[in-house]
Structures are given as structure tokens and as C-alpha cells.
Image 1 (cartoon, rainbow, N blue to C red):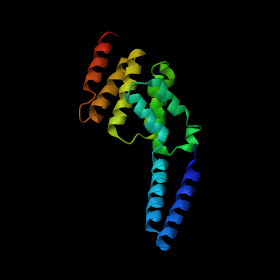
Image 2: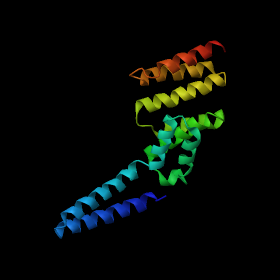
Image 3: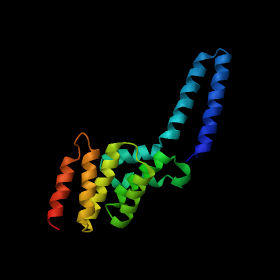
Length: 171
């Protein structure tokens, strides 16, 4: 995996060569190199392994999602803040299948680091509410579910919220 400074240096070098190609009136080469530099800049902000993990998670293949995330070595150093929050969230969702304690800490780290989108925050808080119910912390689960309702403007998580509330009645 290429680190952040190397990606930026490579992008600047390729963009410099693209400008040189434009000056030399090699327009086609300049356009192609500019697109390549743009792609490298895109991978600076969107890590390809996180994108693949989201894809596998959507297909409900936790094993492949975990492998994609494990390809990221030293995430605190190699990921920008937004990517790190999503790395924590994905790791927490995968860990929630096996160990609830570690999953809870990872999901809380994701929320503290800063998930960008409200529906991602709602999903993380919904996972935390499910963990709280399984650990018999009913009050905490209720607080988290009210926050989920506020964050879920489109109502996409209503079924999951109802399911957790029925589980809370059994406690």
C-alpha cells in the first residue's frame, strides 16, 4: 500500500509532467496524465480497501470485508481522519458478529473520530443500541435509539429500530 505522502508526491509529479506535455503541444498525453493524477488524488481521499469493504459488507460477506480492511496496515498513519472513522465503523460492524466488547469500542471511536454522513452516524448508533440491549443496558439503548430516529431523516432504519425495541421488551 502506498502511503499518503507518496501518493501526493506521485500526483504532483504526474501533474507536472502533464503540464509539460501541454506546453510541448502533446494535448492527448497531457489530458491522459491529468486524468491519472486526478485518479491518484481521488485514492488519497477514498481508500480503495475501504470501498471494497463497503461493497462486501453490502453483499453480507463479512470474511471478505475483513480481509479488505486488514490489507490496510497502520490505519492511524495511512488514512486521513474521515477514512479512519469509516475504518473504525467497518471494523466495529465486523467485530459485532463475534466480540461485542471490541465492537463497542470501535464504533464509539468511529463516532468520536467523525463520521461524515448522518445515516452512517445513525447506523453506528443503531449497532451500539443493539450491543447495549445484548448487554442489558436498556436506558442507554433507548437514548441511542432516539438519536438514531433524529439522524435517520428518510426512515430507512425504522424496521431495525422496531426490532431492537421488541428485544428491549424481553429484558
